[in-house]
Amino acid sequence: MLAVRIELDSLEGTSGAFAHIYQKDELNFSDERVRLLEPPEISGRVVRKETEIFLNGRLTALAQVDCDRCLEIIDVPVRAEFKLQYVTAGDYQNMHAAALEESDLALSVFDGETIDVDEIVREQVLLAVPTRLLCREDCKGFCPSCGADRNLKECDCRTGDSDPRWAGLKDLANRK
Image (cartoon, rainbow, N blue to C red):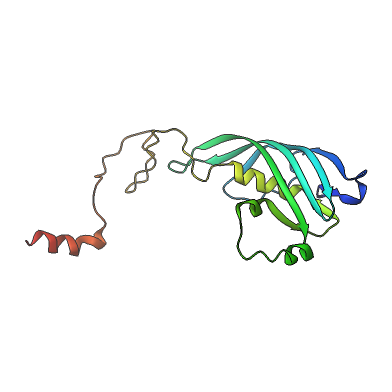
């Protein structure tokens, strides 16, 4: 599997465009929470200013995630616009940044020769997918007692039972 990269030596002048439409299974996306349903498409522009590299681009993809309550599969369209800045490790050390500022969140370190587009795609997909997602707003999830999917059937389990580890405290409160 070849990685998609931007070779800075191949730039004509100080800027250039890049684009790639991934084929199925071309991108190794090994995140257990997010699965790619359709291959991503990425495009953008790269600009070199002295030792800094600036990337502006757009990414589209279709991902799948599991509902956080019932594990139903949810299709999530991914549309991300990004602005990234790259510096070499030496330049980064010379910045003497004592604390990260908001503008530094888009700053990455690279080897000075190539930029890994695959890594940009992985990062942008993970940033675009919400960390918590429900299949629908009123998802009831699984019963904590019997494990039944409450969206499909009601169970006869009692809810509202407290954790047995709190039973001693409950007894103390009831003595008054």
